[in-house]
Image 1 (cartoon, rainbow, N blue to C red):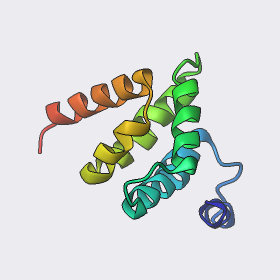
Image 2 (tube, one colour):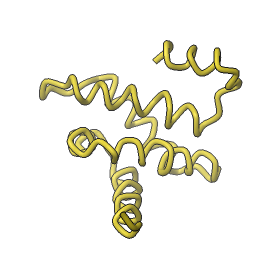
Image 3 (tube, rainbow, N blue to C red):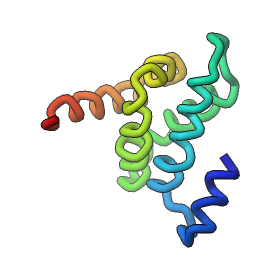
Length: 109
């Protein structure tokens, strides 16, 4: 994950905001971990999803947008990994991503 953050910092994206951090750094990291998962619980994924679950209680619209749009859209674009990720999600995060998925179904093409 440090490599991705360094790349974006080198591109002049500094400081990294929540949308960039969640969509372009955290989501790709999580997707790769889920691709490599061999069926056993992954401690780093447990920590990431526990952190995201806590953030769903935030009153900051920027943080909530980063979770559902920046992170959620990227994760949902990988259906197999999304299904694997569901077991790490708490109830509020699962509900958030269910809403994101419902929105995606309503969009044309």
